[in-house]
Length: 107
Length: 116
Image 1 (spheres, each protein chain N blue to C red):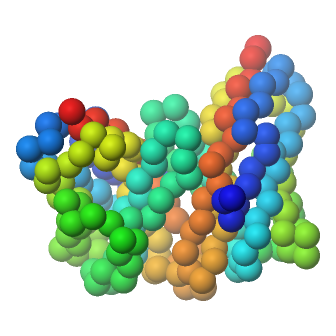
Image 2 (tube, helix red, strand yellow):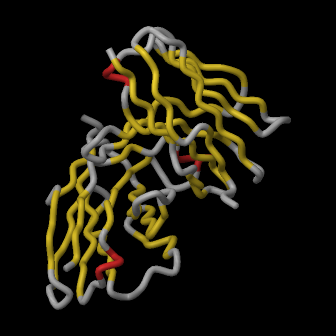
């Protein structure tokens, strides 16, 4: 069992839908990272957070340290949001990655 | 564009070849990382360099040999690889190693490697 679990593994949505991707972890962490990986491989950092909530455009990330859980929300989803979303946690200065959630948004 | 570049983007090599992957960061960072991403598996940390010194070798086979001549450049030298080494190899950088001092990691686009 991975120390960082994401759900769902695959997600399809219609343009405009509200998307939620979940991340649960079983280790102590100092921060959590949400990453976006587009086809072709490049990874972009979306958020790094250690408490509460962060918002950037249509993206919102929340974390509940007590419950060891984080969510990434996408409002008004768009086909260009199609990517793999990866949750990673900092544990003793190492990043531990989830396997990712593949999102496809159709027009 | 994240400020981290990798070359080549794609590489096909035979098991007896020797090749090198290159990573360059233009962010003024002091820590650089090599990751391996295989299909359906989480990213695996391979090596960490902090201020040009290797601080992490995550039990990587010796057929992978990293080199960090300065804080802006990182190489991964490959020799006598196996087909199971085929994967996406990602480079990343941060201000320094460790989240307490390092902040976010910035990733390059990766090199997709196929070993025949």
